[in-house]
Image (cartoon, rainbow over all chains, first blue to last red; front, top):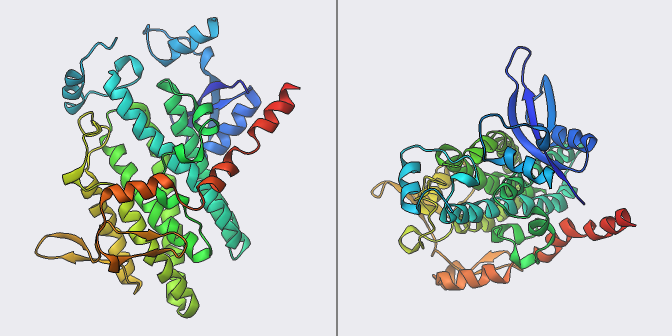
Length: 75
Length: 313
């Protein structure tokens, strides 16, 4: 079962910053949303969203996980 | 090729440097982190079938919900730890589905059956407290930033598990009679089980690099003391016998039985009267795994291949 990494972002209260809380592996966007909602259930989030890691474009670094994701996606 | 030597990285992390990913690591750091995360992930994963099979003893729909909420949390924590392992080049697929039962690295305590509601609540009161003890230390001290961030969530939820265990231990202990006896019997086998969980005493500990690379802050003996410092007073408050006491002269908790000692997994009985055994004998017992090892691992792995085959068809 081929899965992708999705990074999970949440906002606890209205007006708070959107913060990175973790990540899940999922085989498509819909399951990523479900996995994120059930995995990161420690708070009553005002907002949660997921971003497929390959869709994050690194700006100032040429190393690290986001670059790695891009490299994997290019193959 | 790492940009640091092991010694350089050790000095840097001791001075507060935070490692963000594989590009910052040496091979030695990566290995030490892999060992630590594998134990953490396997422990969270194997607590799930252990608690899940015991959740059938929950006495109400409310307690069914809370028991399953704990199981859901444990599986999420395992998933997070395996995801962190993937970031450093390990395969979650292999770790969860490709290993034999005896190859998992969880503590011997999660190879044991939980046979009634009292055992489940003492397990969450004792084992989850051991988990919090170990992970709080990692959270406060680790030099690996992604793990530090992940542990915020894990710490919050483990505290709830512990509270659930404590509330129910109190309730059953206060009820007296059979309820109290069952809690005492659970304490009798789970207290030494958790003490052993923290591993070799410091004077015998092999060098693992986890302290040098600042992947943890406290030694095994210090962690054992932290766990006893909350567990022994809890047992005293509930009128339960725990085989340890505070030694005023030494300024630490002291065990009232030979440590380590032999365990009969069938009768759930520690052979205090047979005296101290060697740590080699303990490792031998751990290596042989406990009675539920294969059943728990099988319950996690069983449907994977079937579903893969359906999806591939």
